[in-house]
Amino acid sequence: MTPEREEAKITIGLAQLNSKDSPGANLEAALDSISKLTDRGAELVVLPEHADFIGPDEMKRRLAKPLEQSSYVDGIRSRAAELKCYVHLGSFLERDGDRIYNCALAIGPGGEVLARYRKLHLFDVEIPGGKKYLESATISPGQEIAGFSIGQFNFGLATCYDLRFPELFRRLVLNGADVILLPAAFTMQTGRDHWEILLRARAIENLCWVVGVGQWGEAPPQHLCYGRSMVVNPWGLVAVQAPDGVANVTADIDTHTLRQTRTRFPALDHIRDDLFNF
Image (cartoon, rainbow, N blue to C red):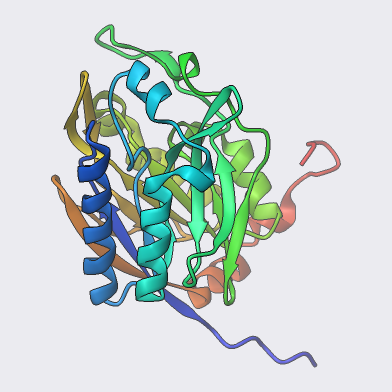
């Protein structure tokens, strides 16, 4: 008989920020949260979407930099190496030729880039109240899914609006993901009605851990973000939730809960891949 794998646990830090239109202040806030969360035992710190900048589109175009020239990326990589921790830097404005991407990076404890994910689904909507968002006016969509591993844990990457597209989460899980990391900047209007429901649905459907880390509060020109960062376990229960405001919270995730849930409720074994193209 094949011996069972030893169960594993990892402490994840959720940095709920209120990023605005000052790149320097945003970086300092991100670095401060990384330090505070590692002091509390976090081995992996996750920052929210747009942790480098939230502001007008014309400033986004001007501030976007290639990965190798981004002061935000350099700062996060240096702090990760200094503290010997893993960091998901949320997302930053990545320039690649004439295109700009909403780009997420996973950074290792040596400051190395473990994974890069360019947001697939762009937020082009008019939400209740008449406010319009047109992310595609500045950002180009990515074309690839991404993930990385820490010990026994396999992580899949998604960003904000991706949460509404369950096929991405199913593909990540079928590729081996145990945990989905989702930095976000959900609006107040959509967040209060949909954020928790969608995070829990994605966890339930895929019998996986889901970590949603959001921006909170007002930012220029007229952004109001919901926050309520949370970790959802593979049964769909909220393990931890951040309060309103800038906040740093931690949660332990483990392989035992994952494997026990998938064994007792083996829905992933019942996928009709003869009918559905996964």
